[in-house]
Length: 354
Image 1 (tube, rainbow, N blue to C red):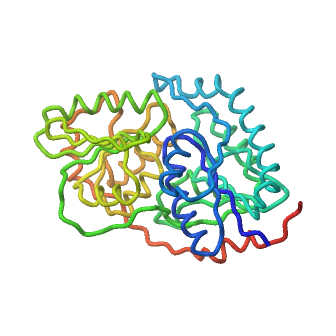
Image 2: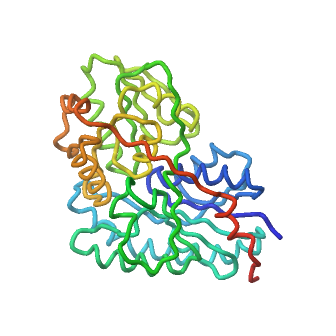
Image 3: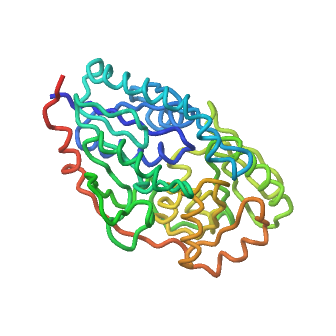
């Protein structure tokens, strides 16, 4: 029997790739041989984290944000012909790679075309309900059709309350084969001496990532406290510069990022779900600025604010004075969950259909 499993996250910011890191590590602990596959910054990040693993390139979904949040959905629709072409291409590739790389399974984090009947294929998502405004019923329906093409659907969250994804990751009635992974993070809490007052942690597709970066560098220009600023730009080499009280990095790998978040009093970031999980694991106070027009991030930010956990502001409205409200909120809850990875990975020990 083969023990090789393809792990392939969507290249939409860094969140899908980073939450695959603990899964890859658990596969290695359980005697499997992971192969990584993606495109763009997601693939670049995984290659830096796992330089010894085989890395394959998948077609890009050509995901871009609009400069105005209100145009976000229409930008995705305009890009959809290219995206559909990429999904069809990756489906052809996975059926080819099963034989070429002797795969015994596939783990796809939100890549829609990596289903195959030849080996068990798993789909990872925290969005069983895909929010899109008035078309939520339609996007959720289409998403469920795609998920059903996979053997199982793994949701990175607690199955019961308290949980972090709310209505995104929990359906009242579902025919999907769902398994909950618990809160999934590559990072661990450590009690260390505080070094920074604020960490700015950026990610996400352009042009919104750059737009927020430029806005925040201006806002923090005269900030008197110590700030560490992570741009979320995965490049060939790490770069570091000082701008007044701000220490700026283009990116950090997991170990350094874990250390730096633990050393920071609070984190200012997007409200991407993987970031929410990471900060909950690290018991961190936070302030969220959702990506304009991205319904999922807006829902998470508003819900966590309503629950008195994390304050939020729209990107255009944010000012540095808003950070004063962080002390009035409780911070993200620590949700302790355990996963029987050996049992979960047992799916991949079934016979292949070559």
